[in-house]
Image (cartoon, rainbow, N blue to C red):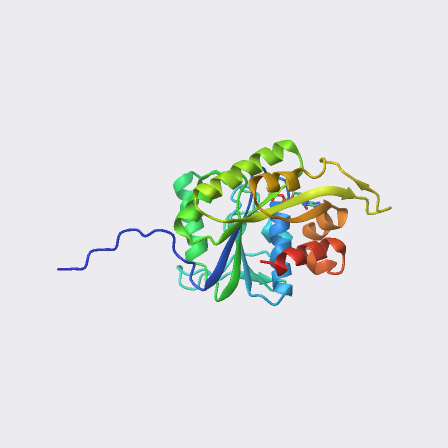
Length: 259
Ligand code: ADP
């Protein structure tokens, strides 16, 4: 009698990956991708073997932020070879679709694409795989936690009330999915003028610190809104790589050291 095909299993370890960490945000545009790119580069700078999976299906920005372009090779039409830059092994949904093409996928297609990027990409041996999630609490987040063993999640938020409210939902979602929340990162914490160094609290101040305390999760960093961070990301070399001695880069390095 032929052996019965195994029932679909619960979360599986991504082959070769020691730690999988999801980077999430409740809302778009709060700097989740910026944080992901800089943390990946910071981990690489610490000598860790690091991968970054850009699963932000609605706005994949890692190819631009990490300065990667072209189609990933698939020698046998099955396995997919990841790309690499700044010491980071990476794959992005943006490299699998045509640039400028809007992704209007339904749940099952999203799940298929995510599954493929997790399991068919030859990540190799990695100490840490960061997954840059789409904003919110939807299919991709659920699928990730159901299919792959997620060791922790980091929530990125700005100090603004509206962004915070959504971040709170994010913490709640990971609690429900039994994924430990490693902490929150406040991005655009204060604005530092690149001309005179004047500091201004554009989006309010201390909101994420207070929220993290309320939710009982650590505040991992407060990253200022700084022109250099945006310029570096747009130029394809995150600030951790392009201005490693800047205080902004140091803030990311500090988080990476404790991951
Ligand atoms: P998300 O992934 O949450 O949608 P992004 O990381 O794409 O957000 O950031 C949105 C925009 O804001 C990008 O142009 C990025 O370069 C810029 N940005 C993000 N964080 C900062 C920061 N701390 N200082 C300056 N610009 C930032």
